[in-house]
Image (cartoon, rainbow, N blue to C red; front, side, top):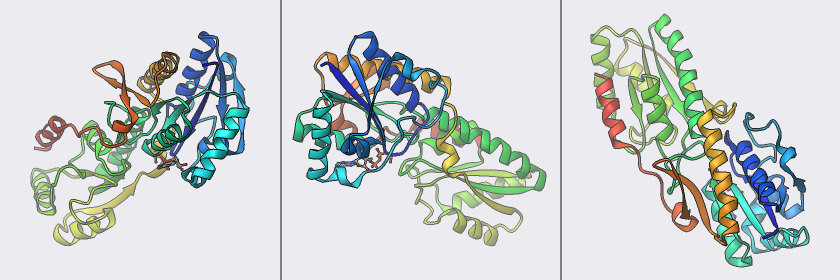
Amino acid sequence: IKKIGVFTSGGDSPGMNAAIRAVVRTCAYMEIDCLGIYRGYEGMIDGDFIPLNARSVNNIINKGGTFLKSARCPEFRTPEGRQKAFDQLQSAGVDALVVIGGDGSLSGAEIFHAEHNIPYIGIPGTIDNDIFGTRYTLGFDTALNTVVEAIDKIRDTASSHHRLFFVEVMGRDVGHIALNAGVGAGAEEILIPEEDLGLDRLLDSLKRSKARGKSSSIVVVAEGDRTTGKNVYELKEYVEQHLPVYDVRVCVLGHMQRGGAPTCFDRVLASRMGVKAVEALLEGKTGFMAGIRDNDIILTPVSEAIKGHTKIDKELIRVSDIMTI
Ligand code: ATP
């Protein structure tokens, strides 16, 4: 392998820049070329490339987002689109890829490899922590800290006004962000897809805490939660009807959760995964995703990684239950 192409794809996440930097610097260390591909698969199809050396990635380890930009590219879902992308890579002399993105981006790389036999390694970049084969995805830790900081602020106003806040957080179909940030921010209740809390228990819990003299409450709701059959706005109405003692508000945190400077944890994780990705390619490996387990950086076949999710931490659910006594 003489030249590795690196790109970010799908939703951005904090730590992507740090991962690009790690890939570029490892290539420099190993004395091979590195080509940046702008805008994910879209830029690959357009041949939107930039040569990167160790100095091209100065001062980006601390930046959120991705300086290579990201995109969703419907054309890459077609064989014709992928053929164009392959032709562009061939004319640029790229003979292996590092893809930084979520499960969709990894699926695309897997199909691309099956069709055109171009070696690749994936780095799981998403705040949702919804990829099997890694305890933590890149950006998850930063998103948790962002959510906790936001809820701390919401708590100030909630307690000043005797309010109950439903705070909706991201996480796609899984509740990792909600559960971890909920425990970290001291939420009253946490609604996640993996655990059927039910409306009755939610009401009971809110009644109980009111009876114990709590003047405000925070309920964290995962965006993917369907266990109550209600979204955050419907939950607000329901609680107002059945528990008229609280002034109820809704706060949907939204895209602020994806931004911001990566935490030290995400920067270190990105650096370790970037090194692993390039080393794996140079060892002749392909079709693997770098991940972390028990503080070791491991490789999992992408075909497995995209099939499942990291399981929700049941012990943390138990801890959360105890905390809300
Ligand atoms: P996030 O988790 O933030 O949504 P993602 O990587 O899962 O990130 P997607 O939009 O699912 O985001 O995928 C990113 C891009 O990967 C798509 O726009 C498309 O170009 C490519 N891709 C996804 N799935 C496939 C597929 N089955 N075949 C070919 N390309 C795909």
